[in-house]
Image: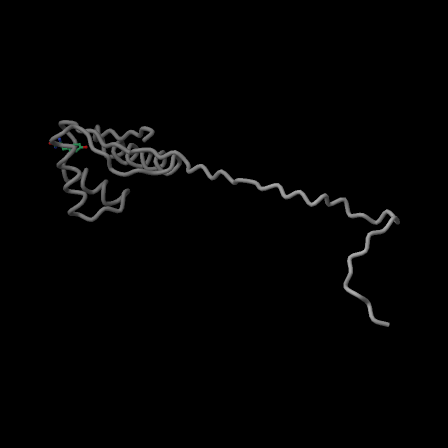
Length: 113
Ligand code: TYC
């Protein structure tokens, strides 16, 4: 016997409940807010210490670190980097801790971009 490819309606109640309505969903992917990490100038922290901090905790080259240190020294403040909240928080903590352990008054803060 040959079966013909015909979709059969029936009255036997085996309907799958699919009404055929397609509901499209839009996935809203909000990027997480970013935070600027700022380094502040003071009159006491040695320049070499600041350069070391920038190399150590922000992965900057010596030249980049020196440049940012000089910007802070001349202008009072500079953005060192921009990160997600937890990363920024960790870096601020690492810098503050390191400065305190070496008895330097270096200040590092963060603010929402
Ligand atoms: N002003 C400091 C000095 O003359 C150097 C310095 C630079 C300190 C940057 C802090 O974030 C800073 N020794």
